[in-house]
Image (tube, rainbow, N blue to C red):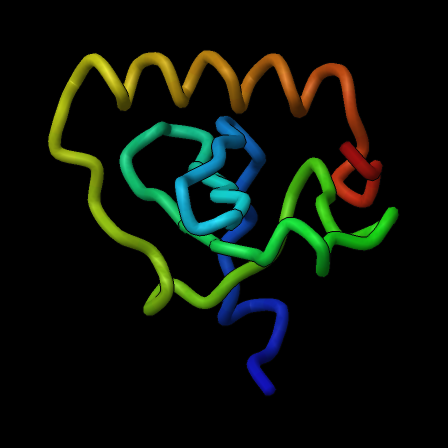
Length: 90
């Protein structure tokens, strides 16, 4: 298991669904440059599964290529971090 120093805090910026009954959660870094994506079965979501923020390994992050998305995600991270504690369920 990684140390806290080996993790990056990311904040929930988007939640969606696909046609396979999966919930797609997207968490972004505060600068909006990198993204952590998680897919969960809709029936497997527990009350405390989706939190405002997560600490993840830098290896689990992907770069965001579109400047529009980077700006939108950075704005959403700012809003989420102002309104929620990292462990708040969303």
